[in-house]
Image (cartoon, rainbow, N blue to C red; front, side, top):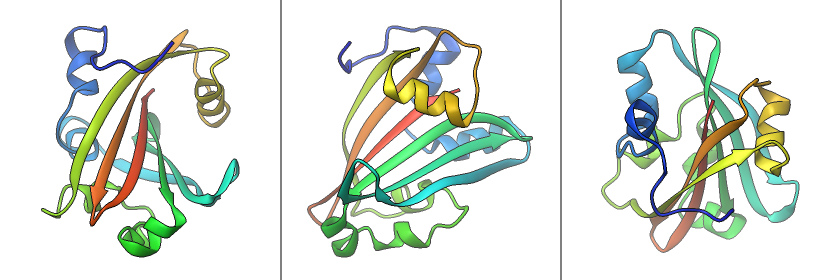
Length: 153
């Protein structure tokens, strides 16, 4: 299944998937004790030309959202250097606080068991769900690109 321009869900799930603002800020408004847990930061294992960061946003230790950020190493040095200094802070502290950063696209996909992303996320945060919705967005700053995949747990 390919990425879709609009998700085929309704209600609260649709509201979260299509959230225009920061998911971290929305989590903080709706839930208690929101934290970012970093699972991986460094060269992308599949392509050393990319820097990758993987985190899980949690509320009261319950996994809510998995996020994977990918940036070309050249673009990391050029415009996205702050990414390396986030630590346990959300990517939203970069994306939503600079007028020079623009979201250029967003797509949606329902992931099922057997999909590499579904299986990867399940290995980090086991789930009994039969499917998980994901959204993929691209961002631009000074001509440098950043890709973000968020999976709703």
